[in-house]
Structure formats: structure tokens, C-alpha cells
Length: 313
Image (cartoon, rainbow, N blue to C red; front, side, top):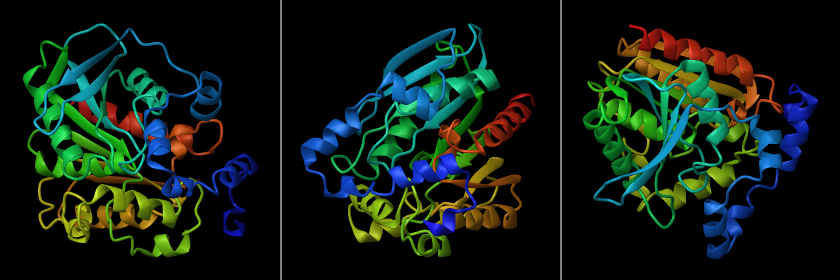
């Protein structure tokens, strides 16, 4: 862990605690299923993810989808109509994470942006594989566009946002539905499932997300090795980057996925897309860890500013 000495002490201590996080790859199925469904202990959640902001209203709904109905949790910061929407997809390598692990972050983003945040509880691998989460994301997007008035949302102002695997799904939707999406916020996203970038080699032992762990996630998500090269799995391999929604890319220096973000920004800019890239000296997952990481507040402010600028147009 010597390469991480530039990080604050509290972050390095957290890194040591997560250094052995490859245990999931060796866990029995029953344990993995329980882990996927587990909630967040209130005390631990406050230490890791910060305080829970009070919402005007929180509603859970089932959205129909042929690939499997999907639960969404809607965070209303105010009781109003025509609220801009943030369609949020959580991290976890398509394998872990749920509505509870990102509850504090979604509350925080909703309160600070004034947007209706809709968190998508997409189905998890390895029991469900690609392309099911993509299909569920598409179904939720169509639901928001068709049910705007009923859920007090403005279907003309939909932003996709996600971290890690959620950033992957957000990038996929932004490309496939570029005419329907106002903007995209990609927070240290997985964009190349082949895992061949420089940062994968440089930070193979990275805290929170090591090479072994992300390889396990990819192997759980794909059906065959050929899927890794599909643009809906690896958006970096897409062939058409024209006329994509404005993008805010958030990356961390000490993150195995760092180069994914850098390479995607280059492709977006080369195609003439409005692209903002904010890079921080931090680890994977930092935007969710306000008490453990030094960059959380600054990155959150960048997200809020970007969202407000786009939704005020």
C-alpha cells in the first residue's frame, strides 16, 4: 500500500480494512445472495456514508419490464410538479449494492440539486446477467418519460447518473437514448470490461476495488467472453460518439478505473460533445464516503453545479 501514502491517514486506514475485499469471489452462493440483500446498519452507515438528509417524500414503485420488473425508489426533495429527474444507478460491479447502500448519497444529491432522484434497484449478477440490467434501465427511462405527470417529473429534463457499474449503465443509456436524455454524470465508471488499461496494472491492489474483485464482477455479469467487447458492456468500444448528452466525468487518481474515464473523455471530446472532467486525488468510491475521503465534498459540489446548470436551461 506504499503507493497510497499521499492519501490522508483516515483514507489509508479505510484502505487497509478493505484490502482483503476479494472474499466475495470465494464466498458460497448463499452468502453472496444474503450480502446482496443486506441493509445498512444505521451506525455503520452514518460513519461510512454520512447523515441521511430529510426528504419531503420517498416512494417505492415497481416498474414493469419484460426482463423482470424493477423496483425504484423516488426521492422528492420538495413537493412540487415538473421536477427535473436524476435517474440513478448504484455501484457494485453489477453484483452487489442496492437501494440501501446508496440511500444517503441519493438523499444528498436530491436535496442539493432540487431534483427528483429515482434510484434503480436493477437485478444483480450472477443470477441475472447482461443484458438484463440494461433492459431494466431502459424500462425505467421509458416509464419516467410516459408517467412524468403522475410522478411530478419533467420528462424533458432527465439526467442519468451512476457510480462504477452504475456509471456503466448510465453511459449505455446516454448513448442509446441520446435524444431523450439531458445530460450524463459518470462517476468513476466501468467502461472497458477487458481490464487492460494502465491503471488496472498500476493499481491492481487498489483499496475498495482490486483487479481480482473487478475481474470477478465482470465474469459474473457477462454471459460469454465475447460480451466484454459489446458496446453495451464496454462503452469505450462504441463506434458512434456523435451528439451525446453533455457529460460530467468524475475520476479518482488511486482508482483501478481511472484510465477508463480518461479514455472516454477523449472520445467524447473528439466527437465534439460538451464534456467536463473533474479528477481528484482519491480512491474508488470516494463520493459516497464523506468522512473517510478528502474529495467527497468538492466532487459533490461539482455534480450539483453541473446538474443545476443543465436543468436550468
